[in-house]
Length: 269
Image 1 (cartoon, rainbow, N blue to C red):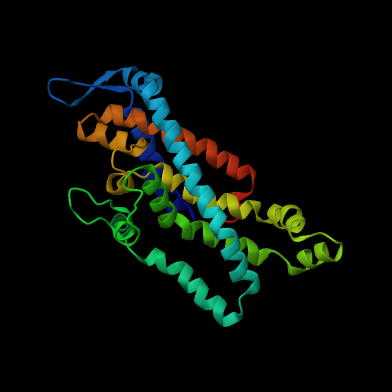
Image 2: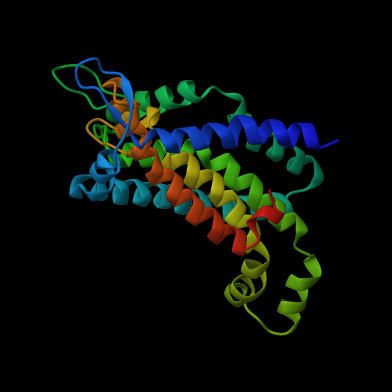
């Protein structure tokens, strides 16, 4: 029964990925702007040896990691309250509230954050923050990080909440009976149980943040991430160079998924 869907996935997803990677090894005719049948390593050389791209990749990884850390820091107390403290009726209402942001459009939420952080300039009123406080972070990496954390937070919250739901109350009670304080219980009892759920949630927040380029264009100002370089190469148009740049996020995510798989993330997806 699963053979046809699996075959479709192999053809559509794996096949297209193979074609994408293969495209990085072809050259571009500078006169016609079309891809030729001549193979070359110049695209890979430009994408992987240029120091400016190394720093861009490092910034992109840093942004994705920081977004993941922010989502986790907020998700832990919220998910704990929903799973272990809230009553049945409040729990149902909170779970619906957790899912509501996923019903809103991506662009609606991104432009909503833009309306909040937009700075005032040239006599023009700024966004909500500038109007209420006279200050705004403006467009840049802080706005990108805040927007991405807002966009992808539900994915981390749902994964961590599922982990807390699977955490037996008897383990926490036993830890307390044995004299462990709240911090020791959290570190030695709760965190080991939650590691697979945290890893599962981080796959979404990290990968979606790493590959995002639309949010950067909306609230990033002059900020750039990997996706923006790929988009720029496509618009040039230089498809082989864009394909070479995509090997960066592909390689990063393969390594990340392998690490998260070792932590048991795929058991919680």
